[in-house]
Amino acid sequence: MTTTMTNTILRPGHLLALGTLFLLAAVPAGDARAADVAAGQAKADAVCAACHGKDGNTPIDPSYPRLAGQYRDYLQRALLDYKGGARKNAIMSGQAAPLTRADIENLAAYYAGLPGTMSVKR
Image (tube, rainbow, N blue to C red; front, side):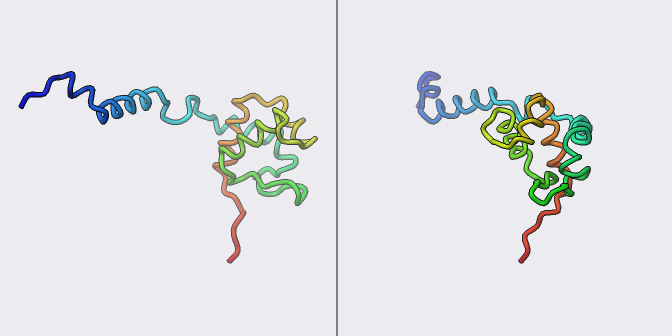
């Protein structure tokens, strides 16, 4: 039994696999731009530490969140939402407004890499 090249390539399973390979090749493996944790720390020390604490775990007010150990994507989304106005807070909107996308990525990477003190009591 002989199979022609056309019959082999046009099988639905092969087309699906080929399409998947093309899609995977088009998607970058991870962030297109790696975050700079040192730059995130510098920005955190200059902008965030006054309210959230130098370690991200000691806010000056109990209503302010602890940032250390939070998920990176959560921190990025929160800062982008404050910057864009989707989240409303007079203090945070003002703090996030001048941040660049790189600043936000760097801050999120820095705080996500710190040990958090939040835990679930059982």
